Image (cartoon, rainbow, N blue to C red; front, side, top):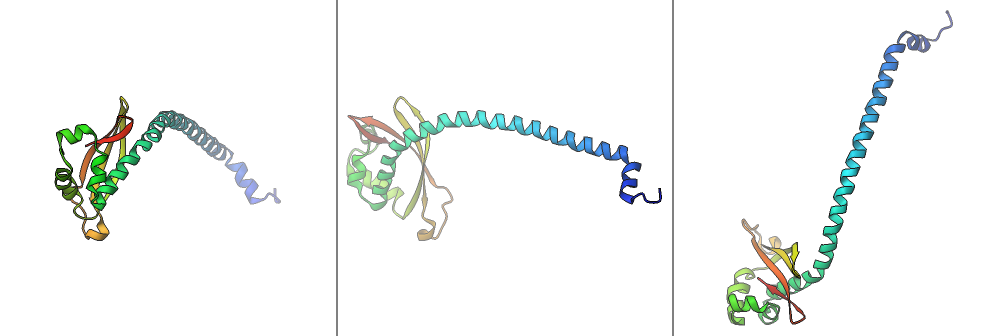
Length: 166
């Protein structure tokens, strides 16, 4: 035994402990693999739900272009073109004429340079619901809004044209 290498001697003396550690590590990786598979199944199920939602968003994004166009008209102060994009329901109930729309909407919400975000919310009976968040342009205004303006917009179809209900 004079020629026995110290590593071989250590392995021979600690066989049980080494075997126990190897088994523990193997069990740990097995449990980790099982948990990973469970999580992957959950993610796949969530993605299937999300894919349906993204299909709705893709269809809705076509309709959201009118909102962007409307908000750009408002930012530039073009009340005439913005007013043309409003649904008759909005015109009857809120803004009976272009001057009233300009004074009570454009000048109220777009008197300073503004930014906006358009968020798709849902769809019901060929009407698309959006949440619009209007905030000050931080760079030009030099301040952050404490409470941004949040509005609901509905895109509806009137006589073959998409119109906005505010």
